Length: 378
Ligand SMILES: Cc1ncc(COP(=O)(O)O)c(C=O)c1O
Image (cartoon, rainbow, N blue to C red; front, side):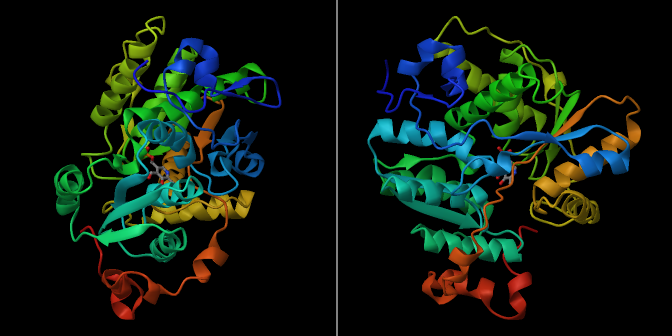
């Protein structure tokens, strides 16, 4: 065993073992670190009103409800990442992302519960109300914040400067898309297969989800294939191609597969190709965090028909792509929308923070007219 796993597994009320990955491959239990964060399984249900309106069978995976503290796709990744960090013994975490990074927020929240400290390196993105709210929340959850003026400089600081400055710290890849983080979605793929097996939902013909740093899609494809499901996963690009592309998805899928097989040779080696990881580029718009009309419309439809809140950076673009797909595909098989956006309302926590308590570099994002024009990725 290379490192000590801190928590091995937990029994769910249904008598099944979490993580599902260790239930499926018990040898991994003593070998891969993991710590419980997620309320699993997250629910699946039909989007009844959307299905009626469109005359199609559309389902949703409610990963917005993965935790009562903060939902979305990040808690799944953090079960394996923070498990690994605990096993390393470091109590200082370094990570980052765009100014409004959801990954940074989830990390700040769960790291605080473990009495760890986190430094968030933040680079520009269009400053929306959501971005401002997350900035206030980073502060509320005790994250140390550094504003880094460009993506390139952020990459240099993350991979070079901070590694020298903060020896012994645990570095989490942007978006939590390290091989460990990807395991969180391998686990989610196995979870969906279990729900299909229990007849909680029909086998979907296709699954739509947003692709930012690619880890979520990579894990999901691997998990579904390990469970023997051939369901087509269609990613929707929301970030620059360097992060969000079939090439990156496949690379991460292979890394996660190698990590699993390194610890358990009995896990089948899957021959995945670009065919398995299609990424729809048509809803990217002007760039990461830039809003699109189709995204606004899909967000409205989901809110009006189902009362479910999407976000304009990720999930609304993915749902817009699903709606386009339904216009062109004539077969009537069920389609699944994977909701990766947190639905826990943290407004009162954000409202309790005065932006002037943030480091000075962030004040301009809250002041006057400039608030909507600076911090753009371009
Ligand atoms: C709400 C939401 N959906 C989807 C994603 C994309 O996940 P990934 O970065 O693993 O591709 C993110 C990532 O930041 C996110 O915050």
